[in-house]
Length: 182
Image (tube, rainbow, N blue to C red; front, side, top):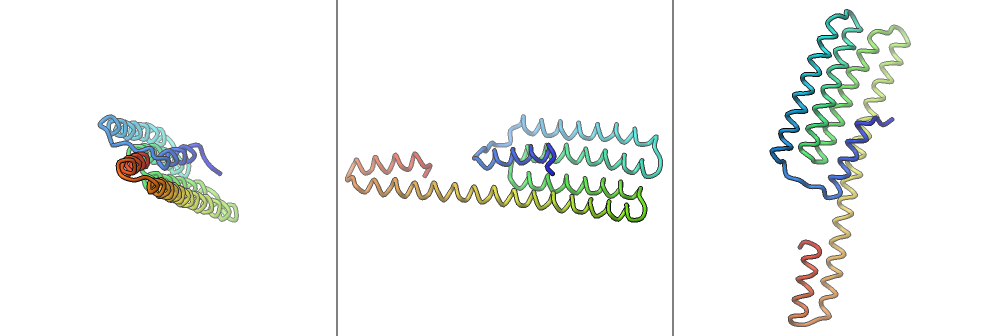
């Protein structure tokens, strides 16, 4: 089961993998800080609403607020850092926060229902972590394959230049280097 934020993280990671590289600009840093501030403010408001509740529902309420904060902060950090490692780390931390929330929901149950709930929570955590790791490995493999293909195409272009001599060969080599960024 994929949730919308995980799909967004995967899409962002794929964009990064496709060569989307940008330097951390002051605007990006400001956007990251604003997202963190917004997450903190929303957490504070949600936490204040939880104070009117008691018992297990309060615990669930507090952990829902924490999970929402973690999600917002981690997505903002991943976008700011814009690396595959950051996106994977964000997905892992979000999964962990959701697991804590699921455990709190299970605490309100008893008997076999509680046991089943806890196993389902653990299964969701393991699945989310496995998906994050698998997606990271897939993206890394695609990047490596793309680099291998470009390297092979560059070698072909250089080999074609061997048919020329003198200035024509130099021009051909220069063109190949420019085309493949070598």
